[in-house]
Image (cartoon, rainbow, N blue to C red; front, side, top):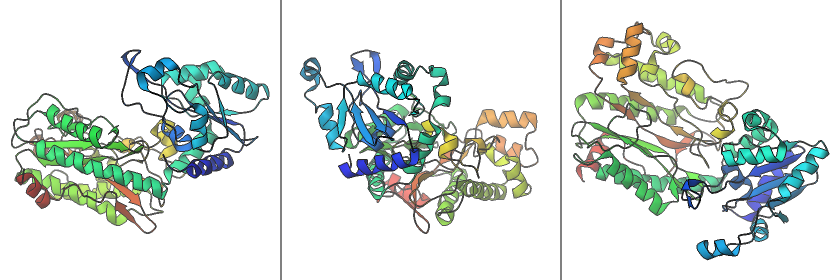
Length: 464
């Protein structure tokens, strides 16, 4: 939690941006894993609720009456039976005072607040819900069926939250840096554990254990696999094999903020010639972003710049051919890079994605693409100082995609399918770091750099 003044200032700014009406920010409730008393752990609070109200207890909601300039924290105090099992906690009134909220009210009062606002024909602003218990609550409070709630969510509130949360305050950047330091320990632990004969699940569990020990939790389900061509490959019982590549994509949440890194390395500790050729292309694309990402530049343009660089280098080793501009325009590069260069990051690892990616990553100038591969770019808008984005180019050899394009002849003038056929057992390579946009450029976050340059990476692996 930040200072009381942080939350007071944020709510004041939110009132100015929304302009009028009543804002309701729903916190999360405990979610049962397999029966009511056995909840998923640890509890995860809603990110926008945390941003404006700072508290992590379940069963809360924040009400901001913009017109009357009042704020209320709504929720029930914990009863004695829960105290017996879980210990005493602060009252809702005390929680409100901690973040500068003058009023508190029991949960049943939320219905009365909504009824009065509706009676006066005032707008009740809420964000698109993503949890079904909150959807049911919104239906009870406002009479809006869950199937209509996303389209009924307040555009003024969405755009206000996106504007505020997109630009990270210095204290937020510091929190992300701390998460990145745990990310360093997670990834280096994976490198030390990833030896021939060890299962993917063991390495994935090692990574999760570091996050659980040094942070609050992982920021998303850990990806660890020898099948790096599968974008979200979960750890399996397969044993690591010498000569294969292992891809680890993992991050943590610490003090509410996330980290997200990816490293790819040889299980045996040494790259083969074919592996190093592809790896160096990804490395060059990853590092190229440092020289071109800055305020005022569209992230879409950075992405396309990387696609052209990747195409040029793949042409040099014979996997692609033809005019680079024409190949990229046709989307031929998506055979190798079927996702975007990166996404916003902060309180959420895909920051604010639940509010609608078209509002978070795009604007009136830059709209999402419908072309395969580029349609997975989660952000294209112009960069601003204080944005935090991931830089994560990759090259993947996906057998089913190779077969599909070859059969249909898609982009055949730009792809050497005969040579590509010999790469079907290669896997995939991705390198990812977290990037802060500064006043005159950008920098990677985290004081400890997870090894990724080939020589330092092999040296680290050799010392296992």
